[in-house]
Amino acid sequence: MSQWQEIEGGVTAPRGYKAAGITAGLKPSGLPDLALIVSDVEAIAAGVFTTSQVRAACVDYCRQRLQAKSSARAILCNAGQANASTGSQGWLDTLESAMLLGQALNIPSDSVLIASTGVIGRRIRMDALKTGIPKLVAAASDTGSDDAAQAIVTTDLVTKSVALETTMGDRPVRIGGIAKGSGMIHPNMATMLAFVTCDAAVSPSLWQQMLSRAADKSFNQITVDGDTSTNDTLIALANGQSRTPAITEMGAEAEKLEAMLTEVCQRLAKAVARDGEGATCLIEVQVSGATDEESARKVARTIAGSSLVKSAIFGRDPNWGRIAAAAGRAGVPFEQENLQIKLGNFELMQNGEPLPFDRAGASAYLKQTAEESLLPKEVVATNTSNDLSIVEAGISLPFDRANASLQRIDNPVIIAVSIGHGSGFGKAWGCDLSYDYVKINAEYTT
Image (cartoon, rainbow, N blue to C red; front, side):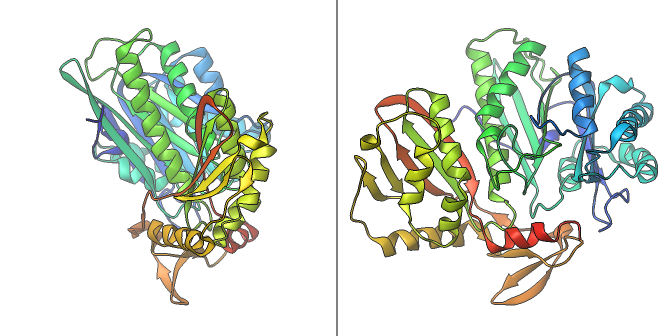
């Protein structure tokens, strides 16, 4: 029996949280663009952020806030303008955003965390933000997670949301999350925003450690295009409203909570990779036989991030040579005579040597997996405002992103690689590289 069960509600599934998402006029498209997550009480807060030297003002702001105080009440996220590389005025805009929300919620501004997403080099449209914040606060409810998830997306085709529940003692404990991300996805951190809520009581240092480890096994194991962003932000709140005993050190309860946190992060991370710009399928790389877990994860990341591997998957070409080459350049020592490669159930290489295999069958496996992983099958950008259309049977049909019910199924192409006889095992997730990726990004600002 699973340690947890999936439930509805996203970030408002845990006790004591409200959320909202509205159209404030930040995006030219007129789609939802301002989101709020708020806890009824001060919550323990942890964060993991981009490692880029070029960072958005909100990233530096959140880092400073969490270093000074490991708690928060609210997260404000705007979409449309990244507020990165915007100089001192961008910093002041972030400070003002926190102040405005603090006033509207009647909480200290240092209890507000800020996230932004959109075009780099563009400041937040503060006039729209100022008008929108009171409406956003008024809209907050314990059923507002889906609205918040919709308001943080940019080039995403689908929203990303999950919530899980377990039992500690005789009381339910829940963790929920929403995320956005589709392009500029690469580890350290993967380019995305993710917000996680929890109603357990956890000590600040332990919660940060748990989140960092969860990020290493999830968001730092996905890649779409090899580009890391300026705005990558993962924030997790734990408000203690489950009324379970506080977890202050590692033990059975802490391990159970961390496992559920990791599962939430992995589900959101896979949803980001599956929604990669122009992608037709999700790729899961499983690496075993390494000397340790980090070595296995490193090899998996390298294979998942290889443009040649990704292009071959898009072309439904079972080109195992590209997989072998990517494994070999990962920077992890291994004996090539130990290398084994499988694509789904097809064994392609063993003991460092190629095996005869059904090439047509392997190609059909790639094609069938892609067809089953996305309904509708193909979605592409059609104009400069990032409006979309569904392409079906060669005919372009209108696609209403705000009201769409696109379904992406968690049915990845499996690449299994063994590099030795060690106990190290790791996974990474990516997507194929299609013609539409170039089209979407070639026209992103023009």
